[in-house]
Image 1 (cartoon, rainbow, N blue to C red):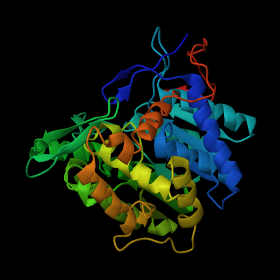
Image 2 (cartoon, rainbow, N blue to C red):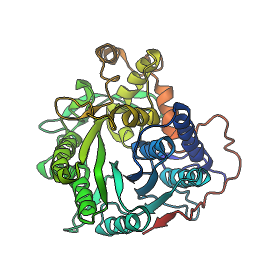
Image 3 (cartoon, one colour):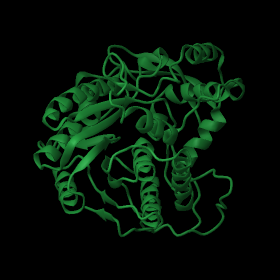
Image 4 (spheres, rainbow, N blue to C red):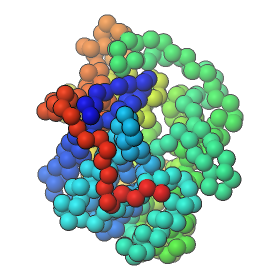
Length: 397
């Protein structure tokens, strides 16, 4: 099949298997170039197919030489539909791990379900014995609660009042004013149910009760704070309420792991182009400005660079450096005063006419398409490629 990029709103509806494999290979090459880290030995990554979850798995496998078990919910190719980018990423990861002689296995299905938790425990007992790291990196718009069977959906809305600001259509470069109506109480509750820390707690509880957690086990989940500019729609909005719950869950999990000398952390990461962040009004424009500034100052980090720094500089220190709220802060470069002051100045100046000069909108656009395997210079997108890829190490529930 000749695979062309097709978009609908803030998502790409096709994915290119060769491009996705190239993305995975580049991340692996980066980790190898940086050298080995003192990491974990046996690692479970929940949400392992894209973004921070995939990068975490790559760092642990190719930086620490760890055995990794990945969990995700992705779609194989079917008929004229390509597989998802996460599916192709995972096939590529498994191919590279196999070539490197690393143990890896992947389970594809609903990570929120009790069935998936039971299957993961079975695989750990059979293949790994006990695990010493759990990375929780799920990003989903919906969650079927495993106990009640109720399906909840998250929303991207402010709380308490309507919010208006600039936003950009990153496909066209048009900047417009957007107003987002506030969430009602039920929407806030549902967003916390989907994106908060309850499922992370359920995972850790199930793993502990099954006695598959090693002494000194660590677990990490990912969060974001961002600047005052985006707080109304993000940190002080429905997503922020969910992140508050996620961060509070770290303390609950740490208390539960005390008898294993275990710890739970939340890592606050920098703003990046992801499928999730592309969906949040205002944020793509902020990221476009941020990228230009951080690249000019030579302090920009992409996903794999962030994850390598997290595991190399923070997670395995005798005392993990955290802020006053107990969070790891690898958003430190983004939140530097000089960076944020420049963003604020540019925000007041940017419009559709000045966007190209004041921001890195082209970099944003390129990086967005590269998430799906497109816009990679050395790939010939007129060539036929095999889209129906499978791997013996990936099992679908």
